[in-house]
Each structure stands twice: as C-alpha cells, then as structure tokens.
Length: 281
Image 1: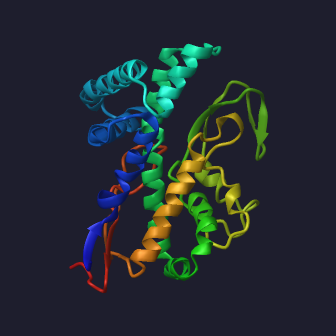
Image 2: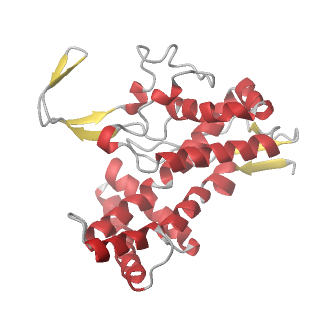
Image 3: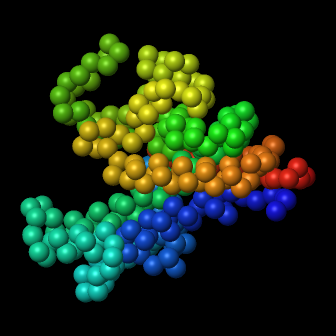
C-alpha cells in the first residue's frame, strides 16, 4: 500500500539469510542471532575496533563458532536435505583427502556470513542505484528482459565487496610499481570495476553496458565466489518482483545512508522508500 518502508529492514535483511539457511540446514528461527554475529564478525575482521569493542564481541564470536560445531554434530546424527548433510555423507562414504569434520565446521562458519551479508548489501546498493537513476528503473519496469544485464551492471557499479586481501605468489609489476613475492596486498575490487581501460565511462551507471559481466566483484580463478550464481539469482528475483509489483516506488529524499564500519563490506543499513505518491515528511 501507500506509505514508507525501510526496504532493508522489511525485505533485504532477512531474505538472503533465509534462502541460505535452507541450503545449509539451519533453522529459520536463528536468523536474528546469526545476523548479529555476522555484523560483529565483520567489525572484528575488517573493521578497526577499539580494545573494548573487541572484548565486547568475544562472547558472540565464541558462541558463533560453537553454534557451527553443534550444528555439524546434529546434522551428522540426523542428516537432512541440505549441503552440510551432503558434505558429512561424503566424508563418511568416501573420506576425501583434506576433508574433515573440522574443515566442514570452518566451511559452515565462512558461509554463514559470506552467503547472506554480501547479497543483502548488494541488493540494497543495486536498488538504490536504480532508483537514483530513474530512467533505468522505469526501463526495467517496462522491459524486464533487461534485468539480467542490469544485475551485472549493478554488481560492477556498486559492489558490496570493495576490497579483498591477497598474497602475491611471484613478483609482479602493476602500473609501473613493482610488488615483491609474498607481499600482502589489499586488492581494490571496486576500483578495478571502474577501470576506464576496461569499462568505457566506468563511473557511469549503464544497464545496457555490453561488458558489465567482466567485473571483479566475485573474484577470479580458484578464488571465484562459490555463491555467485545464487547471488545473481536472488538479485534478479528481487528486481523482477519489485519492478512488477511496486513500479512507482521512490527513494525518500534526504535520508542519511549509514554503513557498518569496515574496509571490505559495503551496503546501507537502511533504505527508505515510498510509493503511490505519498512522500515522507
């Protein structure tokens, strides 16, 4: 109906987590605490917390790990139709090299953040970019066939992952700068996604961009994001449903966008929109 909502709070915050939980065998009732743990983990890993903030986060961090251990134990005893159970079954039947129960716990620990925070942020960034570029939004509403390429341009233009840590395995020269072997580097993916030598007018948002899918947001090679197909699918479905059902949706003017304080993950903590011509005061 008419009025204002916070699109992050009312749709984008929980939905990617609930989808992921089905895959991993996690109860939907645990969404809130896992989302809270994930935010704290982002602060510890990519933020610059004070000593007191680190101490405050430790109980949640420990509980987060124990949750993953207990979940693997439960699914080992009572397997379900999910990815974690399949990994445990594979471990019992085939004993693949390098795979242990501890490795499955760590895999689950990683996916329990990477598999939903990034998609929540990417969807928020993308919908905001479209509503700020009104003509692009209206074209998607009238021509939904444009949505798949728009998804790629959204991921290129305003990725939810700005940077990632890497270690060089050989000496390399980048733009005249020699980087030695075994150097720790912070790769600025967001900068690469707007590289003018690869993307014509890279600072511009263009849902017709022919090479939009050449972005770096999902990584490359052996580091390519495991969840990339799911992330693309979720963003496409969000856009299909919203353009079809709330095509008159607009951004609330003058809102203050806030972000969690870290170097890598970026997405607004709220995204206020209104529809049917009713403007927020």
